[in-house]
Image 1 (tube, one colour):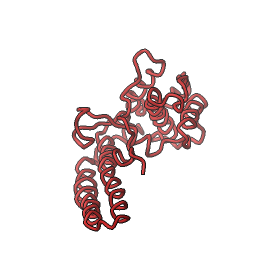
Image 2 (image 1 turned 135 degrees about the vertical axis):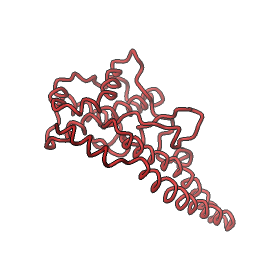
Image 3 (image 1 turned 90 degrees about the horizontal axis):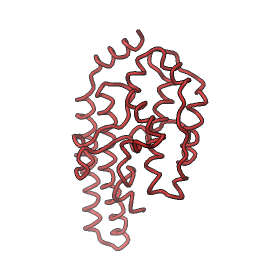
Image 4 (image 1 turned 180 degrees about the vertical axis):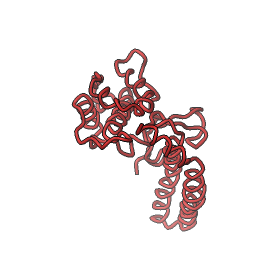
Length: 234
């Protein structure tokens, strides 16, 4: 198993980039991303999107200079992926079946470079969509926030962040799996039992009890969500 999975699980090896350099032509996407929840409440959002001049990806292929460009490319994908999904699925309007070229072309290019389908998926929605308040602190609820959202409600932040913390905890499980496999091969039953107990504890004490059930329900306000959808329709 690659060391990055043992240390970070399926989260990126380095924390996601929070924003583009201020002098970068891509920085306009940060402003657009911050405004997206407000823009989505306007019935004219789709018309506005069709008129946008979005920056094309002009940096080197991340395969050539991964340390300098991969984090920017992932943020580029997150911003465009959210914009595309928002355009197609704007609340209060029928779904769109055609994505305008000015959004589709750069999104397809970004996804081609990342080796993935051109659609906002779990990686863009969660794995690359977080930041730490304290860079030296844990990847855990209370020390992380989202980079991009569809709505102003904190419910969406919380839904995403619960999954980010789960992914961070999963790294410990992957490490235990690798350790248990090596111990089994060498006949070290004590280590195998220790690692299996750690995996079981992470599931029952972390995923199932502590993070998934209380955290997701504690932050969800169905009344506010319903009100937000109604206001968007108006």
